[in-house]
Amino acid sequence: MDDPVKLPEVQDLILGNQIGCIAYELSKRLDVDPIFALMLFYESKTCRQLHDKATGLYLFSEKYLADEFVLEKQGR
Image 1: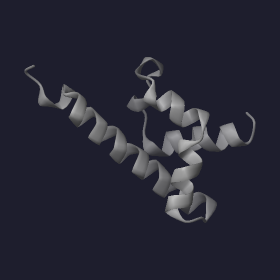
Image 2: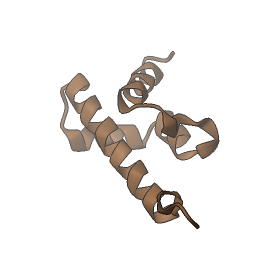
Image 3: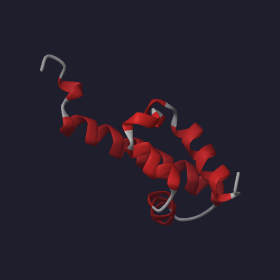
Image 4: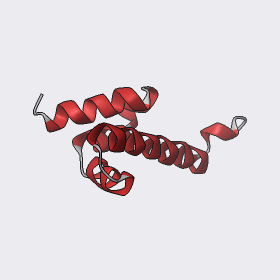
């Protein structure tokens, strides 16, 4: 493989970092502890979709994904 960024280990690190940033954004928006925000996000449909490469959600910003999470929780 020519591009080390495409290695599964690197992709996992990138996704983990992205999820951490989403949790931090949610903690600010919801005024909750970042660990609690992380737990909420991990239990969401948005997180399941983020892990599914076919959805393409991994291409979107953390703020967009936080918006998606909030909309999901609002039932939209």
